[in-house]
Amino acid sequence: MQVLLANPRGFCAGVNMAVDSLELTLEKFGPPVYVFHEIVHNKYVVETFRNKGAIFVDSLDDVPPGSTLMFSAHGVSPEIRKAAQARRLTAIDATCPLVTKVHLEAIKYAREGYTIFLIGHEGHDEVIGTMGEAPQAMILVETADDVDRLDLPPDGKYAYLTQTTLSVDDANRIIARLRAKFPNLVNPPKEDICYATQNRQEAVRILAREADVCLVLGSQNSSNSQRLCELAMEHGVRAYLIDGPADIDANWFSPTDRVLVTAGASAPETVVEQVLDWLKDNFQATIEVRTTREENVHFPLPKILRSLASQS
Image (cartoon, rainbow, N blue to C red; front, top):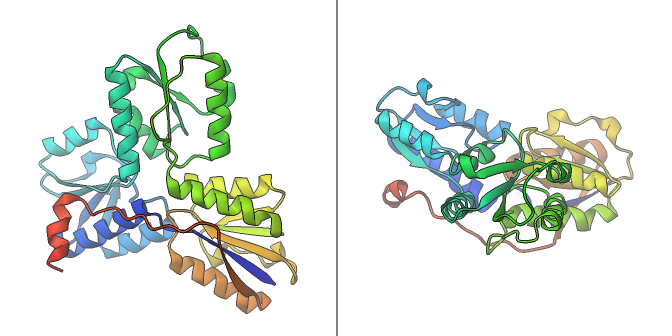
């Protein structure tokens, strides 16, 4: 068996920043540290932090007044920030800067009187936070068919934004349908789908041509990991989204398969290494790293943590 190990893969700059932030907060403030939603959408990461004293909550009612609270990488709505202040919580914001960019665009377009189409997945933490910035001005669009159902005058004042972890191809199809229906549609100066999402999708698009099977490391609630799996299947490759080696079925493979291994932006490298070890142990796999693009993006820690980090 030959394994094509995609690079780039795994943690992006936003996830690295959020994970480092929670690690440092637990170290400096001590447990428990409350986190609003999962810090990132990865089972392994969440369980690791839970064992260290992080408590993940979906309601601020579950956070005792005066506690330390971290906002996850996916961002939160203004209402959540106000509620945290009202409960006298020490709030540490680990929102990915690329998500913050979308929030600021939503505020700007709403202030300028636009109706905003947010392209994204209903119920996703990032979408909930973004829509909270301008709920009266925003319409969620999940598919191209949703565009056809929009009953709005074609010459209105419209803008679109996107969830940062979408399939580039899917988003482009929806945007094209929006433009056809609303000729005056305005777009953000720089696209919202994040660099890491695009780079990981590009790697799968290129390398899937050479593979029989694709393993995507990531959790089922990870949007960007789901998109990688779907993309591989669109290219005719059998693809499986797994949290780790325990999820692998040996019957997925034949001994001479070429297996593409990649990881979503919230999947840690330790789990990738465990999967590679499993393939070596069970199929005598050889590993070939295939780099499609270099990444060197870094995001600073939240301001409240930077001085603490320098004391470490």
